[in-house]
Length: 140
Image (cartoon, rainbow, N blue to C red):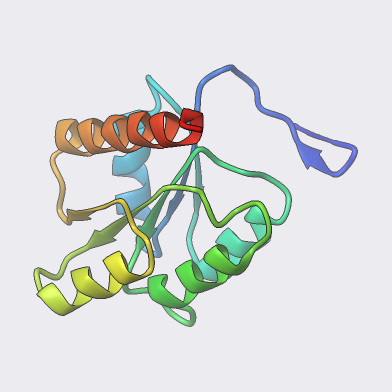
């Protein structure tokens, strides 16, 4: 629901933004998380950035390989956004190459998940990232 230019949440669940150019992955993410979280899906980094101009999710699941703007470019822009730089990000990747993980860590990801993922593993990592984020935001 949109009111006064702002997207209004429909529940009191935490909000997850899932960004992946593969519809099947977005469906699997939604299936794995929707019982516990509100899940918004977008299929590109450009759409994710547009969404983030209006809404601040509690966590972002971000695919690395997307066209035209990949996950790293998207993450750099998120980290430069006022009041969005602190959103925890879990990168999704089909690559086990350490250089990709190191680049994500350099950009401030809190975790990464290899695709294809096990739904319970994804849920556990999301829960852990949100708990860690809550703890760090409540520290003085």
